[in-house]
Length: 362
Image 1 (cartoon, rainbow, N blue to C red):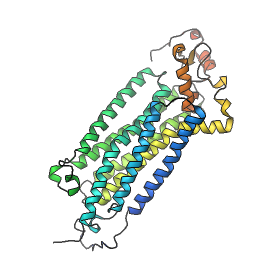
Image 2: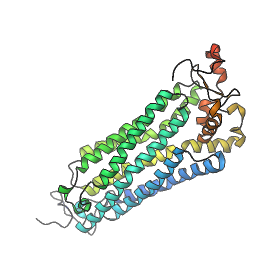
Image 3: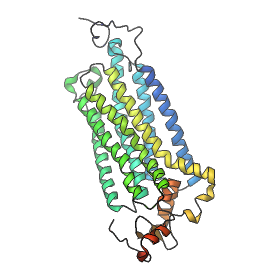
Image 4: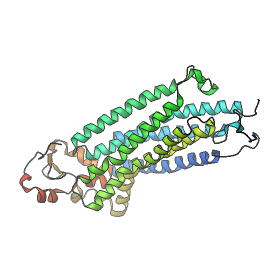
């Protein structure tokens, strides 16, 4: 039986290719526009704060953030092309010629997604490393191992997605016999996203609460560093949606939903990677640039030590400058993690006042 669209319609449905039902096409266009608009604002604020307010050279999280932003722009553009060729419409109301162009756009989106997701997660994890690296050394090793696993997965996934079909054109011509199991690959992506987003969400909380800071300060810092994990909800949604619709033939709808969840995941992650700089800029505007130069907010004591958690005194005289710059570059809340805690440490462990070693092994 012949049918006008790229796939047979459900029973009782009459396709109308001239006036197809707009299910998610407009939503897709609006989402791409809003993602670019809001993320661009936060990235621009981060760049301004970094270059004009805080100063200092670019750090690994800067490179990761700006790389993720460029990749996100490419991802959003390919999503718009997908929408122009039937994405967000029911597949039975899209012509065969348009569906082929749609799948070409989807192929490009999958290529952008792997490095984009990797770099935004690296940006968030590197921020956590810069805040807690000198305090929780064992945790730091674990984070580096986790980063290695993320990089290994996404780099291998990048090449798998490039050669998911052979010849590559089989991806958009619909010859499934020459392609890997695409549903399994997308499901694996979703599982990795859920795990990594949960780690980013949960990891900063115990690290922050181990520091001797006022409760209000702990909550603020935890909120800043955990915000990137909010994307976990969208990762879980994508995983549930893929499992539920893995046998669906309406791919012009299913894959657009996958793309939109990617927008939420990466867009939120990028905004959260910029929050420390936004916080620093806010403090500079409200309290003046001299606030960061106030000795009371310095992260390094006169003896070349940083007062850390519990009863720790760690000798950092050889790297005072690096620590101080790092704290200031990250913004007010992150600088406060290692600042002005000498009195609290003395009160808790007076016998360790002159020690240059921690009482416990980090």
